[in-house]
Length: 254
Ligand SMILES: [Zn+2]
View 1 (cartoon, rainbow, N blue to C red):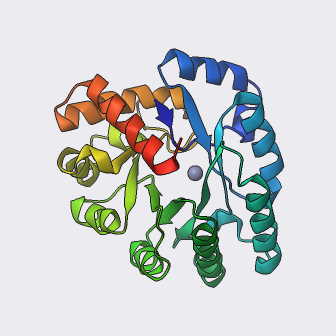
View 2: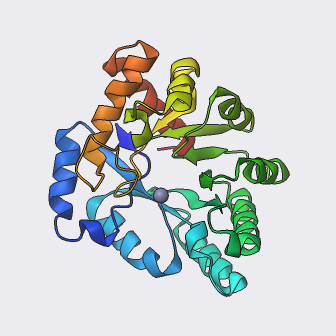
């Protein structure tokens, strides 16, 4: 089983990263994908992916819009091309749009479009961060249709929104929000949508399921999310794990 979205390169894990990987494997999660967030993070991210034999994606998160967009994008393009034959590089991202950061909206949009263009050119799927910006993300995905598709990570919406993404060839990243009894829309989505469209993720150290775990989220928690998905889909945990693993393998060509 794979945690398809875990920022294990973040400083929150510096003190006990070995133990976090150990707990993850003991919980039945064999590996993870470390998404890229900014040029300042790439070096450590790549070193840790190498050290722990983890998968990784390369990209620039909308929270880290570079001052010089062209410079940021040419650095990203060069790095992606340099690692294109590396079997651990599985996607472009995370990239996307976040309307909570309105001041940088024009830069976010240009950065997202440039990364979709890059994903098209190198034929990789994308890992998309989208907060309060589904209309704009869907419009971009229509303009830059991607043969390999991708994932809308940390999906929280209802079935109708889910289907608009599925129709564009995207999967839905299901994370800690699934543990929240108030997340009714998401529960409805996970009960109704065929399992082949879902991916498992934690977004560690973020998106900690409230009232369930201590403050920091970690990949081992994904085992609890499988139980909750199984409960909502009325299927066994074994079946859910096998299908989610298959979905990740197909999307990221593992
Ligand atoms: Zn993330």
